[in-house]
Length: 129
Length: 383
Image (tube, rainbow over the protein chains, first blue to last red):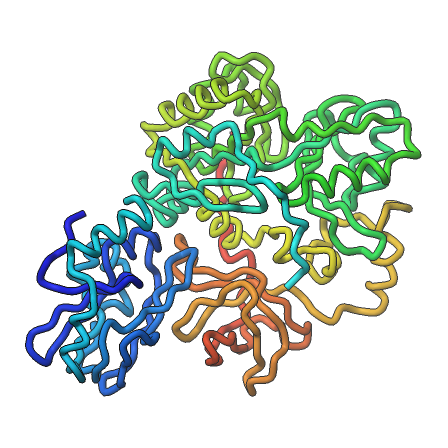
């Protein structure tokens, strides 16, 4: 799997794509593969504050419950409502099926996240995909 | 939740372990066994589950154990240690039953097969193999009967779903149309003579379980031939993930969840498999007493009304938020496309349609007491 280089990644398997102060967040293809069939997503509401490294929601597959961790701090401006009724879209296209759009509190936070290349290396060591 | 089973020091593998890995199955530890939970490249849990509901799926269930009782007093022994009435079994017939402690709680649930005039085979759960065998041996000493642990002798393959019969018929000379549900036969399967074929399963569907020799080469040969024969029916290899969601939709109990050494037969709602007209069996006296005292909790089906998935161990609350019970099993139900659960709650709160709550991440999420089984397979015309 080639991970898009237009975004950054966390070791908890979220991605974040920033354009200026605005950013989009989702989970990685590796995450959706590890989870299996995703059947439930719980996301914060528009206006909620999320904090880097802290849980902001939950994703559940048939078998597993997993917390979602914020790659960066900010205020939620948009939530992908489609995922409430069609969570399987994450399995089909994890890098396209975004979860949140946020206004970044501090865009510098992204500097500490993994590049696509580093993330790919990280998951190949972690799971041997 | 019930106390954990004694852990097994080493992880055990079935004879099909390498085969599963070659198929890129996702492997997990289950009761001390390294088992496939799903085959992502073949479809994953939801596809596997629905293959069994609408076509056919194949499972490696070799982790299940097998105990044979044979000899002059085999029937007396089986009658003494199990709650169903094995005297009703014709040769070749099977029944769902359970082994009970003197307190009327569960050692395990079992399928009792009558293989011969004085020969019975108990099929038991993976996590309780040693416990069950020791218990059966210790509690049948007074009978003239041989007790053997055959657990490692078989690779057990389950072929489940409405097309299971068509698949298996392609690789056996046994006339399957003459084998009714919960009956067994013997026949040549994939060229292997005298294979035990049982029309049983744990999915809520029609299907078969075959017992083949447990060496790796034979096991892999049968597994591959069965999958090959099933191609025209859209067969999928299925893991423990689908096995769990299938049995949950059908309200089939799982040891350590719906039944355990702290739950009795009446609470679990397994009354119809417990034959109190049998004058004596282990657990009977306690059950008689428990019945007269009445039960304090009962197993109910829940369907989530609000968004959320109830999981094993989550608390059940009444509408006012007071804790009244717990979830034993819960999941998204892939065929019904609903979030369902089984839970123990007080009988007075268990009426059909009653609104309860499940505590999910600190929030009370509304659920409704639903009829069970959640799924019942459509009746087919008899062959």
